Image (cartoon, rainbow, N blue to C red; front, side, top):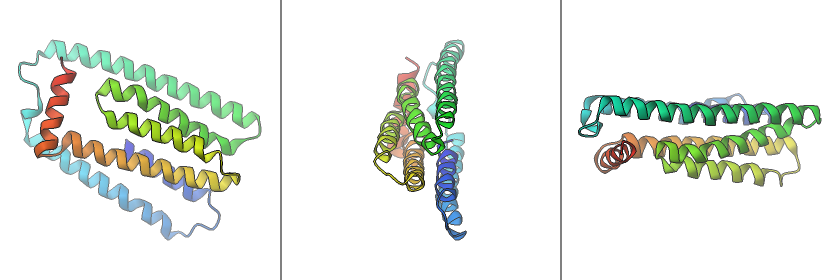
Length: 189
């Protein structure tokens, strides 16, 4: 999800930059392909290693906790969508459509903060604060199209870097895999 969202922001950045050469869209595909390939590799590694399941996990207890996490995630996601819709409507009616991406990046950033705690993935919190900061700092750029371009690229980089870190820490081998196992065991307590 992080990889695809990063690609969407990179494409939005390029689309809002007049005179963007066609080849630059191909450059966006490079990190996307790299991250997707890395993700598939990590999923295949997980499939081979069933040692990531915490010992003595009660299936019913696990399902109940999973449901609770799902409900909380749904609430965070619903609030995010509602806030984005309200911001888009308000900014559109105010005649400031190029501020919509600024608001969206800020809202998406804020939504990552509770997800960091909910999923026990601190990288989400860091990504959230970076996105919120990028959104606020982008307001210093007077040229609105340049603002959208720079903010879109910044959001893409933050999301792609977050995807890479999450994949490396939570699905990788060796020390990262032990870290992931500890996170899962902590999550199930």
